[in-house]
Image (cartoon, rainbow over all chains, first blue to last red; front, side, top):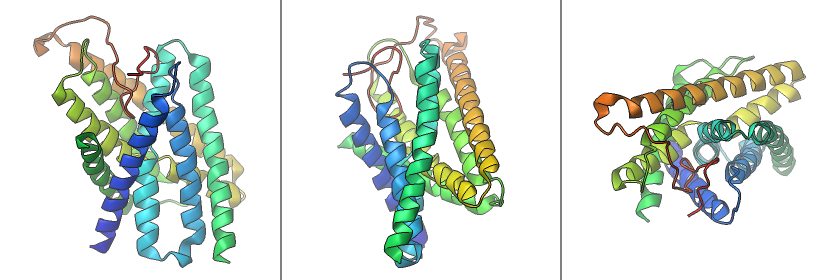
Length: 123
Length: 157
C-alpha cells in the first residue's frame, strides 16, 4: 500500500515538474525545438542514476517514490517521440535526428554519472 | 492551477500503470521488456491523442482538459526515458555495449514508428466523415504545453 502511494505521489510530482519546466523553456523559445524534453529527460536520467546509486541508503520506499515515481513521471518517452515525428513532418529531419540521438546519448551519460556519484556517496 | 492538478492526477495514474506493467511483464536480463512495452504503447497512444485533438482554431476547454490529463499527465507519466537510459547504462556497465546499442536502436526505432502510426491513426479518426466536424483544413497547433507543443508550426503563446 505504501508502495502504491509512493509511486502515485512521486509520479504526480514528476509530471507537474515536467509540465512547469516545459512551460518555462517553451515560453522563452523563438524557433520551436523540443529543448524542454531534452532537458527533462537528461536531468531525469541523472537523478534516476543517483537514486539507484544511492540504493541502500535511501531504502525501498524512497527509491520507489523518487525513482519509479518522480523520475519515471518526470521523464517521458512518448512526448519525445511525438515531438520527433512532428519535426520530421515539418521537414526538419536533421533536427529530428539530432534530438533523438542527442537525447539518447546525453541521457545515457547522465544516468552513468548519476549512478557513479550515487554509489560514491553511498560509500 | 487547474492545469497542474490535471497533470498531477494523470501523472499519478500513468506512473501506477507503468509500475503495474513492470510487475506483470517479466524483466529479462538481456531485454527490458516492461520499459520497452510501456514506451512503445505510450508513444502510439500519445501520437494518436494529440493528432486527434489537433483542430483548427482555439483549443476547446474539453480538448485542453483531455490533453493535459491524458496526454501530458497519464501518457507522459506512463512512459519513461530515465529507466530506458539507466537500462542502457546497465548493459554498457555489464560489458554488453552491443546489447545496449541494440536496445537503443530497437526502442528508438519502435518508438518513432509507434508515434508516427499513432499520428496517422489520430488524423484518420479526426478526419473521418462521420465525425460531423469534417473540416479537412490543415491542422494548426496552438499550445506550448509539454505534450501538445508544436514543433513545426510555432507554438509559443
